[in-house]
Structure formats: structure tokens, C-alpha cells
Length: 67
Image 1 (cartoon, rainbow, N blue to C red):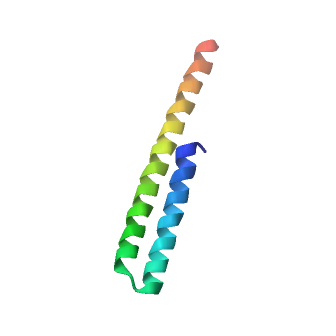
Image 2: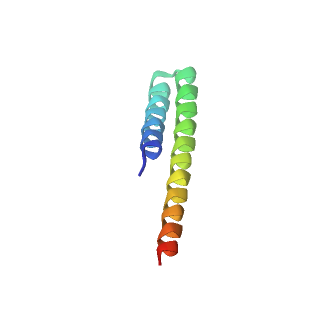
């Protein structure tokens, strides 16, 4: 996992926590903020995953060229 994937997971968890707190406190604004954080975290994690996959593909091409 790279840095973007880790930060995305953390932001996603923070969003889920805010949503749960918003439900417990009956605070729709906090719930909405949590949903936005969760979506941003998912997007960042997906970006990191894509970046890692591209890096792995480049490494595979490099290894194939060396052979």
C-alpha cells in the first residue's frame, strides 16, 4: 500500500465515525460531513491503488525488457 491508499483509508474511517456520531447526536450536518469525508477517502484510496498498479505494470515491463 502506498501513502495515498493509507490516507484514503484513514479519511474513510474518519467519515464513518462522523456519520455514526452524527446519527447518535441527531446532527444531520455532521452526518453529511462524514459522508463527504468517506467519499473523499474512497476516491483517494482508489487513486492510490491506481497509482500503485501503474507502478507495478512499469516494473513488470522493465523486467521483461531486461530478459
